Amino acid sequence: MLFRDKVVWITGASSGIGEALAYQFANQGAKLIISARREDELQRVKQNISSECLILTLDITDSTSLETAVNAAIKHYNKIDILVNNAGISQRSLVVDTQELVDRKIMEINYFGTINLTKRILPYMIANGGGQIAVISSIVGAMGFPLRSAYAASKHALHGFFETLQLELKPEHNIFITILCPGRIKTNISYNALNYDGSLYGKMDAGQEKGMSADICAQKILRAISQKKREVYIGGTDILLVYFKRYLPRLFYWIASRVKPT
Ligand SMILES: NC(=O)c1ccc[n+]([C@@H]2O[C@H](COP(=O)([O-])OP(=O)(O)OC[C@H]3O[C@@H](n4cnc5c(N)ncnc54)[C@H](OP(=O)(O)O)[C@@H]3O)[C@@H](O)[C@H]2O)c1
Image 1 (tube, rainbow, N blue to C red):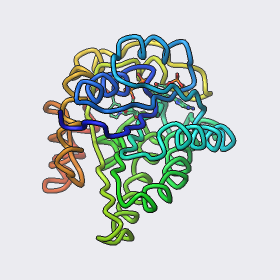
Image 2 (tube, rainbow, N blue to C red):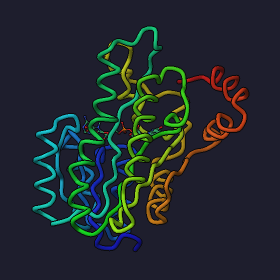
Image 3 (cartoon, protein in one colour):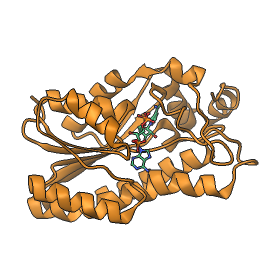
């Protein structure tokens, strides 16, 4: 029971990685808060969880809904031990075609929504004597990738924010940040990805279909959080691209411009 009686708040828990995280944290003894926009899907997830589980429906881009949710969470549990910032959406469009509304929407959800919730919970963690904050970035938080300009930018921005937060926190705060960077994981992310004009891409990519299961990804995320790792890459051969970018940049540009991006 790695997380017995820890209060764990997971955003984006209505599907995919967040849903898998909810089940695994519950199996490890955690008390949950699960959030997303779709209440019916959160109810479905809750039905599969036997431990204490509070549903807080929210749109992460809406500050009022975040404030209401944070107040409700603190009223219910009196503390948050672990925040898992997982909610996010992706993109499937070339830079040359992508409308500004898509760039802004992806930044609003993946970046501004995430940091807004984090900043609201941080003072409670400090007052409570500690906590952990995890953020689900992506391997494209460490490199560019075709058809993912706004998505990659939003994930890079999360690295800048959370690395800075970790540096600002003092040992006496007892707060640890873990940045998780999955490669392709088989979830609905490509269904929910945005086209150049903000419409839904609406299909399962062949690459996504072959990705790691959300359950295995969630297992690795729990291990990283329990070990208080700073940054972890999760996936198959796709994560090699990160190391190529760092150590063999010419090889990275050669491969990444030829990999099928869908
Ligand atoms: N799958 C991959 O290959 C992969 C790889 C690297 C990183 N990631 C990251 O993993 C995270 C989870 O993605 P996933 O693959 O599990 O995709 P997913 O199945 O589409 O799940 C996305 C989750 O985010 C929630 N969400 C979206 N917009 C929201 C909003 N405005 N407010 C609140 N919640 C919102 C969705 O819930 P509602 O629709 O109910 O609001 C859903 O629960 C994302 O941050 C993604 O970038 C995924």
